[in-house]
Image (cartoon, rainbow, N blue to C red; front, side):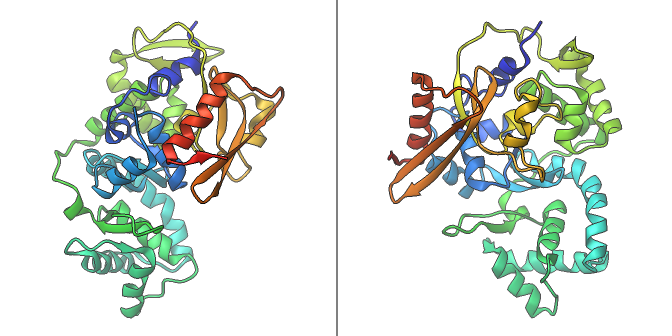
Length: 349
């Protein structure tokens, strides 16, 4: 029987740091959840050889990695090679989800189409503007951007392929015109796109179930099933405790002892609907809050054994660990702590 947790560490390229370039890690995984921006960079870094926070920031500034709303919906890192076809696939369903909130904020379709046009004009000519700067443009046009309307307006523009992430401006994220930032790319039929997304997910996240894929993608389960059906001949399956898991053939690998400090919202945890393979039920409420905040986790041999956090003091970082039961002080933990500090380019306190 396959060891689900261990195989996920391997297939997600955490154990062997499977990539030379950060953009390759993002493309391989399909999308990396990224509402916690600093932690999302560590999610890429822990899968990339010799990566630093700075090199990943540079990849984002160059547009080799983009940050946008594309799945479920929430922020994700995505490859510019994939953003067009993924948006074409996922945006219609997310628009349906957003419609309730738009009505509540009195944002009509006509108004949102107008804000799309105004935002496009604001960033045209390779301008990279912050959220606050964009809202000034809309306010000058007589559009109310208060009380949560601004976020909905920007998400609408992202989903319609008008805006995507721009270059970092100090500590502030910016938006840029997608047409200027992303090269033209082939288009696919809906059926082809479902297959592409399913292949990407099960290749990089397996062993995983259909329900896991549906959760991660945000697609209707019927669409998720169509995607899996179109590519399932490329995978093998195993039924464990009544759940059918799909993964690449020849995936089973000898167990390797491992200890990692994984970031908040890491794909190892957030990308599965059922997380029991790595997280004991008694610790779920500690690792994941009631409102869906996934905390940074200590993972030992595929199992979540505790939480970690960090605080900064100028050029130093202090990393605190909290274990659910017995404290772990083995050398692999010390190595994991040093690796994170090195990624940041800071000394440990």
